[in-house]
Length: 368
Image (tube, rainbow, N blue to C red):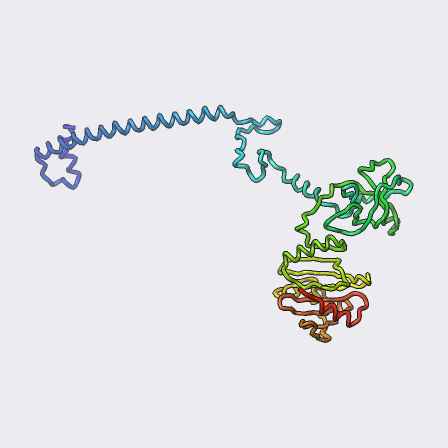
């Protein structure tokens, strides 16, 4: 340190103090200060080193504890499948399951998911027998191969609530077991086959597909022909759509209901006259905020047809407070009635020969 002070003048010559006088008393004062600061620096350095050593020790101990606990929990498993590279990744924690893993940590096969979902859907052409959908195979069965009558088709059509004996392919009639085939897997019924370039009566082969599942009754908004199902759908539509126009008439029964809330609420209802099975009242209605072009069932919607003719207004009426317009529809070859109510637009048409009094009565009995 003394040597550095002896050369202090030379070092200061290169600084801003080059021209300043530096007496011996000043040198001694500086030396005293430097020695004092040196002791302080030594003390600081000592504590600094002590802290660093302590921190290092604590860190090392923590790492050691972590390593021991990790070994006790189990070492990472190696992928031992032939042809695969070894993997040292630990098993995923149940709390951090990825989007393609189930709660057990097993990877899901997205392709299998799609296949399983497809397999869970009812076939398009089927017979319901013994609690299962039997799917149409496309094969015909010779009559001499039919054995015992084991069931019966009771109704043909497509329903939400499927019953035993329902079919979308063959009309009501017996179901048979087939020679040399397991009756639990294959059945046959009389329908229409295509042979030698023409359609003719024949026996179709059906194969068991999937079990019939009961639908959620609260989610049925569309139904036809089944009185129980139609009633259920109507109740659900009332809950979803709020008040809408229904035909309140003791001589008719609802046979069809369809509901949609796309672009706005729309409802289609069919009523059959109880006294005449060939006479129907067809009612379509949609919210006034919708344009009729947004509702394909509207008589005013061209649906992209080039030969579309806009319905022609013939007359206007007021029945029970509702104003009705009577139109000639060249596209369907009939007539229909339109009323623009406070919230709904109604389009009503009829099937069968009805007197004007009957039509007025039906239009007057449309109530919310």
